[in-house]
Amino acid sequence: MKKTLPFIAIIASAAFAGNMINIGLSYAIHWQSLDPIEFMQTFKVDFPLLLGPTAITLMPAF
Image (cartoon, rainbow, N blue to C red):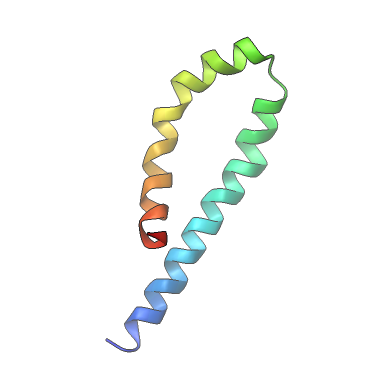
């Protein structure tokens, strides 16, 4: 158990960082190119799809 917990922490931190990099480099660039009204309409559709991966990688943070 003493050796597995650090590995789990490293994997969870890497998953969280990877998810944040993915959102920052792909979605954010696209969202910044949209007009405010168009952004609100597309974000309303995209937001539930983003909750799954983010929730999984945020669990270790809590």
